[in-house]
Image (cartoon, rainbow, N blue to C red; front, side, top):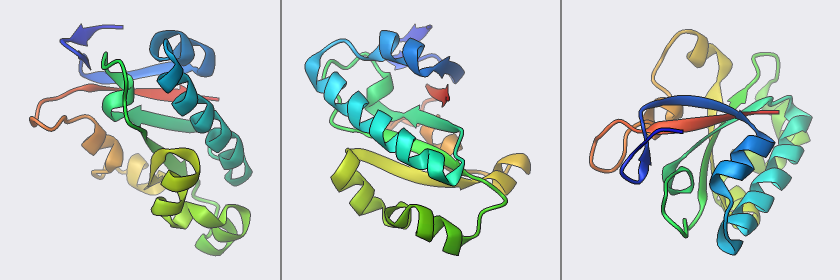
Length: 139
């Protein structure tokens, strides 16, 4: 991985879960956040989400990030009603944060395919308005 200071160099880095853990889980606070993220990813399989984009402090060199910022792709073939039936709290970000410690942002597959601005784009800019890298975890 390439870094600019504490931030990942700009780009989207594709990792599997194991490689992500090797790179970003190296102390107890990060382990707790990672285990919660894994639980959430397992639950999200029920809505056919096949990848998560991770940004924010968890994918920096900061020793103790406070949470995980994640985007997930809403499949085109799932309605809001079906999503709510399969994963009711997906539509309530504060409940996801409370239960999993993850700020979860939805991105529609259609928006991604049409190159519309999404949370994935937002994740690639830090608070100083500088470009930074993010991780795509495929599972």
